Structure formats: C-alpha cells, structure tokens
Amino acid sequence: MFFLYLFVAIALSSPPSFTILYNNVPWDERLETSWGFSCLVEDGGKRILFDTGGDGDILLSNMKILKVNPKNVDAVVISHIHADHLGGLWRFLEVNKKVTVYLPSSFPGRIKKRVEKMGAEEVDVQGPMEIFPNIYTTGELGKGMKEQSLMVKTDEGIVLVTGCAHPGIVHIARFAREFLQEEIYLTIGGFHLIGMDEKDVEKIIKGLRTLGVKKVAPSHCTGGKPIEMFRKAWGKDFYDMGCGRKIKLMR
Image (cartoon, rainbow, N blue to C red):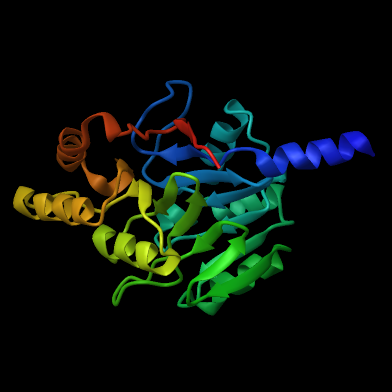
C-alpha cells in the first residue's frame, strides 16, 4: 500500500511536459514527419493527446519509437475539424477506446457519433472548461473556423498549445491570459502564418510581446520565414518544436 501511495504522489508531483508526436517540421530523425500536428501533454499523472495528426499509422509508429503507450492516454482533445488534426483519431481509437474525446461543439453529428460508436466517450466543447486539474480548454474560439486550444497552468505561467490558431494566435493568447488571470510563459503549436506578409507577422510578434508571452515554440503551419522571424525576436527564449521534441517544466 505504501508503494501505491508513493507512486501516486510521484505522479501528481511530476512536472508538466509537452511532446510533439506528429509534425511536418522535423526534429528527431527516427520519426516520420507528415503534414499535421499532435502533442502529448502530461501533468499530474494525466495524459492528454492534443490533436492526432493526419495519419493514424504514422502517429502510432512515432509513439512507439518515443515509448509512449497509447493505452495510457486519458483524454483526446481535437482542436478543429481539419483532417491533418483529426485524421489520426480513428486509428488511435482502435488501440485505445477508453478515453474521453473533447470535440468542438460545432463538429457535425456524424463525427461525434463515430467516436461513440468506436466505444469512446464524446464531450461537446463550446465554452472554456477544466479537463483535469490545471489543464483547461479555451472552448471554441473564432467566427469562421471554430477552434479550441489547451491552457496548462504551471509554476512559470500558462503554457498555451494551439493546433493551427485559426482564430489568431494573439487573440487566443489574450483570451488565455484573461481567462486564467496569469501570464503566458510559453506558446506551442501552429500559428497559421504561412504566406503572410512580413509586416503582418511583425504585428503578430508585437502583439504577443505586448501580452508578455515569455517563450515561443511555433511549428506546423506557422511557415518557415515566420518561424525564423520568431526565432530572431525571442532569441534564447525560442524553442524549435519539431516532431519528437519534448519540453519539461516545473510545477
């Protein structure tokens, strides 16, 4: 019994970590890259799979190489309906159906029914909600493409994880800061800036700086040139966050 309590205590005190399982931006040469995004969020003994990439076989293969057991995942959060974030879900559920899947409320009924038919629990997400202690979803944001992001409270501040940031990365960051009433320590994920004019990217960088975002880790749909602009703007506080990269923080 003592060892059980010790195990639980260690799990609850373990620092939050963020591992990129699927990305078109490379990092770990052992992994297969493909267009899309998936990030494993671990905190307080809980594991959340944020997005599932576009190909479930690639996702599961990368998880195996990184020694991430899909059966140990507690919940899946899908940011938005695009296939490069949703496509890997079905293959994943074939391996682990004992999860709760958090889908934006605007998703069509056929997708929600398919999740339930595969044996998983489906939760409609409209507004912000707490998924596990210290881990929240922003709820659906955006007027066109509805999208949810993850907010994780750490000792350093909020870690914000975005899929594609269609509602605008500055808007999402501002929402997270105001909702949790804490500073943003790190933003991870796709910022959806491919093909954007450099002056517009500079405005976004200025917007995040004004909000006090301390560190950034843009990838996926951010685009090569914008990523380099973020690297220059944040310097040592910029993280390359390609496929296989893992970051651990303090609680």
